[in-house]
Image (cartoon, rainbow, N blue to C red):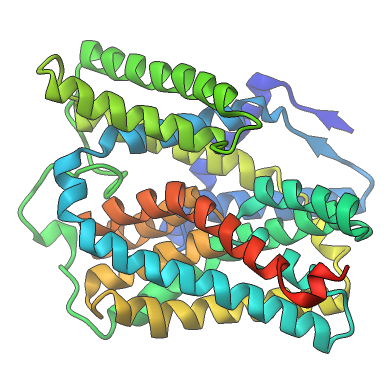
Length: 402
């Protein structure tokens, strides 16, 4: 077994991003279907590690940097959200939220229905529904423990981790093709090279150059650090209370308060260029570490009935994005980008959603409303709503009797 330390893991993550860039640049299929660079590079490395494991060689990474990078990414989302922009996106946020809630309900109904049809415990269907797909590894681990201890479901935590891994991989793979299919039906803004040069906002165009200065960069780095510190402290205060929230939501909330509080007091205006640079760096490195660290052999342990449920969930996600999300959001280019983002966090996580949308907008053109709506809904509202939906399903008679 080879164990890479902190520095070795950071080098490996950087190489994964370079590999992903090279693959997307040179492989027409990846470019045509808008596969995000971290997903392309990360999956190649994960597959290589799977092959090595078959030769009884295992490589492990130091993932201690993964959580700070994820929190830094969510801090930059908060620092990018000013109330004026949020007000402009208010109605769109509400409509998109309806689509998100609809998917959560459908995912759980699909999971439970297929589980019962295949002769499995309905709890397994719920665990392969919104708990692990929309909720991800963190939510899956939490509910897996509950299902094991309270309901006596064997291997619930292992099933949750494998399902969340499946969702993370597929969420990064189907968003681009779904957007490509939808964009053929609408008028896209066109290639960025043909447009008038503009400074991109937020996370829209990660590869566009941004003029920054060392001092303003340090100022923004300080704001992110404050968001991480205060958000972590807030999470500690809310722990085991009725208002408990995931750490990344607390960090995002502090970022929003900092951005708008300093602006309202006339003390400081956040430089979005620096925020976007640091946010994109954090996002890329986080995804690289997350994907190259995937234990794909966990997926091999999935029994055929569970695999059937997850495959059906992937198909439902794609169809829902095409026939519900896209149409509900207006059937235009922005709606196509939103559909790609919905695939990302509907099966995987908010960082995957952002990477999906970046892959699309990098090729077809900007979509400011998508990068305003998806982070807000995917990072904040979905976790709260998902808990409510899960508890409503657990109140059904056949669960209550367990």
